[in-house]
Image 1 (spheres, rainbow, N blue to C red):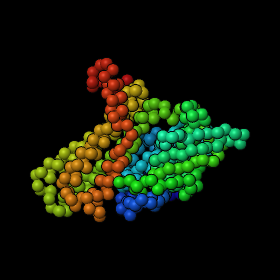
Image 2: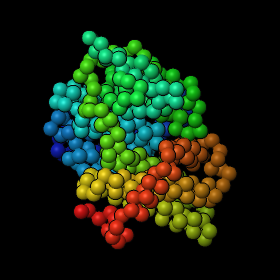
Image 3: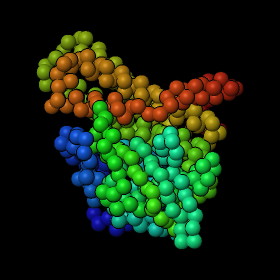
Length: 380
């Protein structure tokens, strides 16, 4: 597919994601190294239209997650994560960036940045900063000059369009802007010596001295953190994690079948418990995606549900990991066994920020709510 060819209403994002998942799963082992990056898989995302798919259909994309619905996006993210969690992490950031452009960009910004997506540029969203100080903006007559770094930036040195937050004054509200980056520049991956997700090219990006025009700023002050979209969007990375959980489950299931150990009642009991966990995670993700898309409840209530969903998916992932490793035994910890890398990647990607705060703020919203428990999440 020509990446500049607008996608049609007949475009099947799920079929494209299945194709990407199949080839990404075959390549993931070779990319599992400290300097790894799924370059061929990202190229496939572009070739098969998935880099363009989140662009609204009126502007050349497929409106993935908007016109096509959150359920389809959840399925696409799940499938990409099934093939490779590192690729899924990168693609989820790309989708997030384009949705933020669609929500907060003006007509000229949308036209320029959506054209970049159609051209095959990989977008990232980089918000994390070191404790000693964040990214700063200085306004001058010729534009805005950046100073500072972003940390834990996935796709560092590979993403060529980065949506970042920066402040003009240290205590001021953050502003969003999308900055163009040349491949292989400004990135330091030396500290990314992670247990898993090694192919995600996560590192520090130094944006000091980069100049952008004044109209690079998207939306207004602190729009990046506007609820329910900021916290509510966490269902997307939970959908990617769900794909990783399913990949672990299938590697475990395949091992039992290949070794002829599936008839053991204890093995069957563990597999049944794993199936319950996988299906529970899937239902949480789909319900969270649908509630956020409908936007028919107060922001606090939607955020509470998504917080519970991300924790339910985390629990399902941890349960499946424990059950799979107990069933497979030591073989599952040996390099070369399918379960070994999949388990490392999933255990690493399940570590998302502030899980305790997510749980307690959701519980506080539930405690303060009136009515029956069965009506807490019903659309108004």
